[in-house]
Image (tube, rainbow, N blue to C red; front, side, top):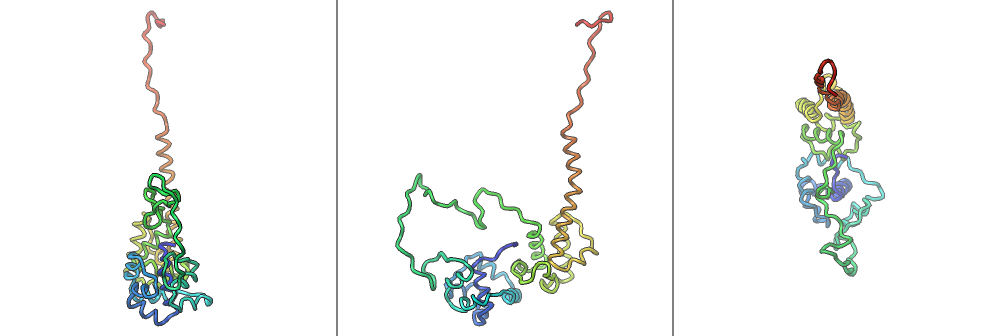
Length: 256
C-alpha cells in the first residue's frame, strides 16, 4: 500500500475504535495519549498524527475494525497485550505488562571494531545507505497525487475499510469540483499523459482512476517505443564507406 501506517499508530486506532473514553482523549491529544499506555511514538509518527484533521481521524477510526477475540486486549491498558494482538513482539523492556529483561548475555568478540553479527545500519524507511530507493508503482503515485490535490492525508486512502475500487473521490474523500480539476491536472503532469474531460468525469472512484492512468501510461509507452527503436537502429548502422580513389594508370596499365 502506498505509505503504510506504523504499528504504534495502528494500535492507537484500534484501541480508539473500541474504547470510547480513549477515543475522546486520542482525538484531543493525539500522540500524548500513547505515553499513557506505555507506547510512546517516534517524532515522525507524532507529526503524522498532528497533520490529520479531526474529522479525517474520526472517519479513519470509524472504519477501523477489531476482531472480537482481540477486543479485550485493546480495552485494557497493557501495550504488550495490544501489540501481541497484532502479532507484534515489543522490543522495549519495562513497558506495561511486559516481562523484565533476563540476564545480560556477553557480546560476541569484535574484529576491527565491527561485531560479526552486527546488522548493516539502515536509513529511515528501511533503505540501506547507498542503495537507491525502490521506485513507486503507478498505484502508489496516483494515491500520492490524489492525497496532495484533494488535500487529504494518505492514511484516509490506504487504511480505508472500503477497497480502492469502491472508494469514492467525492463521497469518501470529500473532493470538490475545483479539487477534481486540480487532480486531473496533477495526474497529467505526474504521468505526462492527457486525460480528456469527458473521460475524467467517469473516474469517480480511486479504482477507476488508477486503472485509467495505468492504461494511459502503457499506451504512451507503446507510442514512444517505435520512435526509440527507430533512433537506436539508425545509430547502430555503420557509416557508408569512403570512396576509394582509382590508382593512376600508365599507358592503360596500373603500376601494380
